[in-house]
Length: 91
Image 1 (cartoon, one colour):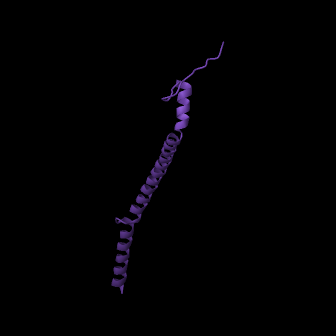
Image 2 (cartoon, rainbow, N blue to C red):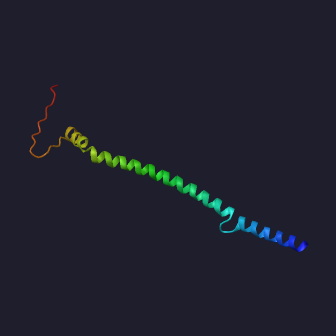
């Protein structure tokens, strides 16, 4: 009877050692969870940057009229077949 108890205890120790220290053990899984958290934070930051760049691209694509109007007002730019007349206020 004593040999059975010793054998079962030895098997229990082996199973516990495998659970804690193997490649798929608790320590390894906790390390992977930590890495996963870091990667998720990086992905969230990249998503934020991507959304900002997409908003800028959208503004540039849709806002060309605003850019053109600003160029005309500040730089005096004209299109073909346009006549530009600048009126200066009297002093």
